[in-house]
Every structure is written in C-alpha cells, then in structure tokens.
Length: 163
Image (cartoon, rainbow, N blue to C red):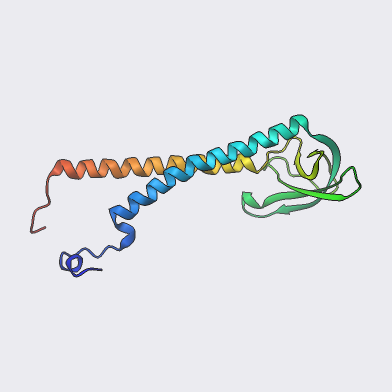
C-alpha cells in the first residue's frame, strides 16, 4: 500500500481498485460469450452425431451419486464393431437416475467408436453453454452496478477535503 493511500485512510487492497474490477468484468464479458460459442459447437457436434451416428446398445456399469449436481455421472460400456470395448460417461438428470445394468442406446461415430453420446441425455456442451450464460449475465449485472455507482458519484461532485 502506498504512503499516499495510508495518509488518506484508504486501507482497501488491490481487489477493491477500480482498475482491477474493470479488468475482471471485461474478462468475464469476454469469457461468457466465448464459453457460449464453444458450448454451442459442442452441442452442434452432438446433434450431428445423433443424426448421423451408428447406434448400439450399452450397459450402465457405474453410477456416481455425489452431493453436487456435477457429481451425477454414469458410465456406459459398449462394444465397437471391431469388438473393442468402449466406455462413455454422461450426466444424469436429477429426475432420471439410471441403475447399474440398465441398457441405453449409444450413438457413436463409425470412424471413431470412442466418440459417442447417449440417446436421450444431454452432452457436456449443454453445461458449457449454461456456464457461459451465467458468466455473461453476472458480468453484465456487476458491470451495470459499477457504472451506476460511477455515475452517481460523478453527479455528487468532488468529495469534501475534510471527509
């Protein structure tokens, strides 16, 4: 902390500086839409796979039932056309928990059987889009609040010297 800040009684740290906060908001504003775009490409790739992929049956072999929603994953084992074992992981919705031994439809790329999605389940792209929307919304709200604060301070005029 500089001597000038200590002399005026400003003991706030770096995180409270307007420059840092502005840079953080701008980075969030850039990261949010970028994340939405990346997630949208992931969703489009999954949709293309659902339309054009090969279908086979797979068996649920493991179900993670953690406390957080991000821990709600399950694995499915299936065989590729060449007989090689494959595994795909997916998130299960809160209202549709699978059980070990359940049979589900796996849709995979014919030229790359390890690339697969499950029929009726969202892929990871949906979550990525959601994170991007939340980042964008939060940065817009915080940025608007900061702008309103700056405009209100500007409308009050300079701070009195003795305050």
